Length: 109
Image (cartoon, rainbow, N blue to C red; front, side):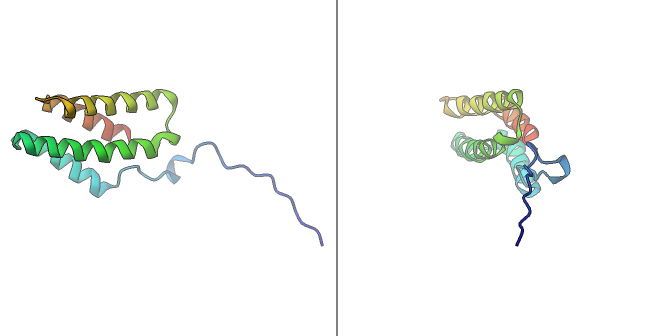
C-alpha cells in the first residue's frame, strides 16, 4: 500500500476574494447609524455608545490583525487608542471619536 505525500502549505494571506469582511454589512450599518446619532445623545448616552463601539471595534481589530501588514496594524492600534482616549475623558470630543471610529471601520473592511 503506498501513500502519497503532499507538501502543500497554505498561502500566507488568503486571496482577496476569499477574505471574509471583518465587520458584517449589518453591523457596519448599525455602527454608522450610531455615529450619525451620537451628537444628539445625552452625555450618558454618548458614553454608553462609545464604550459599546470601542468594545466592538477593538474586538474586530484583534480578529483582523493576522491579515494586516505591519503598517495597517500600527494604524489600527493608533485608532483604537484614540477611541479609548476619547471614551475615557470626562468630556469626550465626540467628533474626534466619530472620526477615529469611521476611519477604523473603513480600515477593517
